[in-house]
Image 1 (cartoon, rainbow, N blue to C red):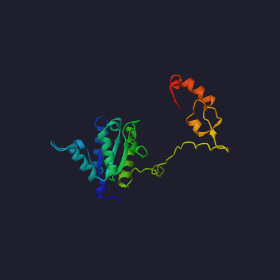
Image 2 (cartoon, rainbow, N blue to C red):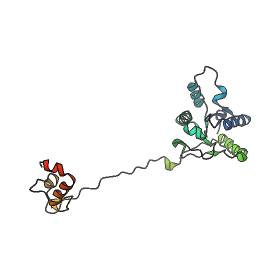
Image 3 (cartoon, rainbow, N blue to C red):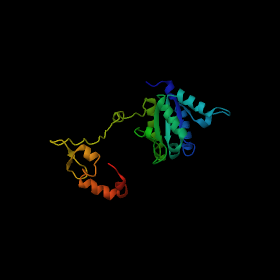
Image 4 (tube, rainbow, N blue to C red):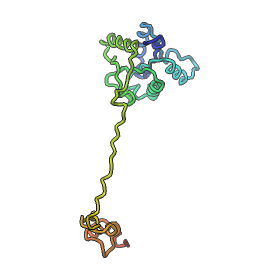
Length: 208
């Protein structure tokens, strides 16, 4: 069951394009008896910015992450989201701009869509129900297991019944020693042709 502590909310947003919705959410949440915190309202002159943000995230059970192009590009917004997740907070993504991309750590999480002003009242009530009902974004079980596919090299061809393996260039049987280090006298014709075509200068100087 949600407690009074669950009514304390941290709002993560980008100053570039999330201020208007963040301010509206803060106002409407306050009217609904929530304590919603915005960094531009309670920071006092001379306060250590990062320490203040960290303290608010750590002491508030719920974090609303407003998703906009600005928050996607903001290292600060990403850090706030990741800290909330690492601290075990209930994080609810809120789509605040149509088509806004999501960082990888929120890719598989459900979100509330507040991009349509005409549907804001209904979507806001759903968000309030999520907060009061203890709802949080959760990873699907299928994402909790990492599927690993191993690529293996093909197995070496077995030796033939009478011992030697086929030579790679000509596919004719020759001894392993001859295939690996062919001498001028024992080299198969395919090796000689390949050597002449690919290494014309080196072949004259090579001493197998």
